[in-house]
Image 1 (tube, protein in one colour):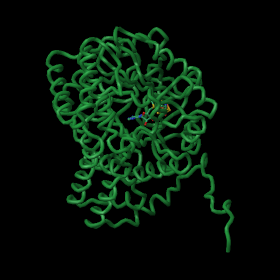
Image 2 (cartoon, rainbow, N blue to C red):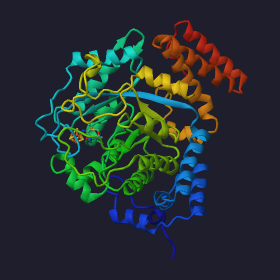
Image 3 (cartoon, rainbow, N blue to C red):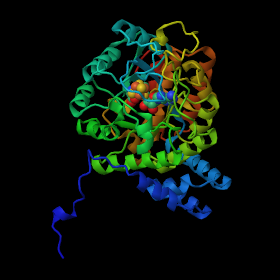
Image 4 (tube, protein in one colour):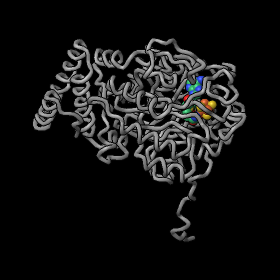
Length: 475
Ligand code: SAM
Ligand code: SF4
């Protein structure tokens, strides 16, 4: 029998709900990992292949300590082989906490009468951005509750205001968004304001749990949320972030579902998500769920190592929800971005920094409240290169994470030198004397590792220009 070209074509599943709970569970139930299988799956990842659902199911079912150690060692090896030593830093800026949803885990939910509601005025927004710039921040994620006042036009206007704020040598060079899902027109409006990544987390991919956790409001529509990043793609935003809130349901199911979401976006739009987030539930005002799906520290570190191996070319974001110790371990598995100097209380960056955390003003509690300066100092001590690089996005090199991974020498040519340039700029503008000493040492060590003498000379020349007062140099 002969097929016409039309019949060879796969059906277009873009904008269609794609997650089947039973299918996900069937992969988990089918996997009975042996040491050899775990080894083989890790080898496939180290050979730069994205894992499929069956392979990832082998990793999530591996409970033997020897297998777990192999998985963690595999993630560390992948990080060293592919990503090098740089860690990109950012800060979240909560713009407003009005919300019409009732997510049972969130302090901003509409039914929480104790929550102190606020949307930053334009002046307050500017004051907060100036305060962030005074510490050296260059990359922000703006966070919003889901409320009709936070319209696409409002979000776009907020983005423009933030980009316009300049304090001394400070400026914000990349703004990501974490806000409610929009329709295609809405995403187009926000895109025009020149955003980086648009993040929407599914929270839990498990249908019954989703229903329990999101009893009312727009967010109660599972499918509308699941297809939100399809709409972003249709609107031309090809830089999107997915995530699951760990602790709502079985973590193994969520890991496989995140991968299913990656598959879906790759199949429909030829590009996977730019980043994956894996927030773990923290205590919040009027928190209203049992902890039967609590994810232990051991499970959490394991699931991050598994995600690293499953999607070797996707950025992994780790937040200050986690403690310093957990962050330290997880960084070694290849998280590429962390927040630092984080404050969740609305307006807190521009207010008295010593106020104690007040759960009624925040979305949830954080566990790492170190300042940006402290985080940078500690990253340098651990031989990482703290980076504020925004070069790819500004040079129009889209699909950056994929290129880092797949283009030989990309990291050596762009990422590491750019990380060094932004670090040099930070040292000149903001670092204490002792941090500066550590910072220059890290730069020297990384320069010594460079083998292309011509490129190294150009980089040294640019570092010298930064020392003479120039800013914003990048390759
Ligand atoms: N309102 C928008 C939404 O729900 O998508 C965007 C902002 S919401 C403030 C950002 C994320 O915070 C949520 O997607 C959720 O994963 C996370 N979150 C909510 N409550 C949390 C809690 N108690 N602990 C940790 N993370 C939480
Ligand atoms: Fe509102 Fe988002 Fe909190 Fe849900 S998670 S209550 S949508 S702010």
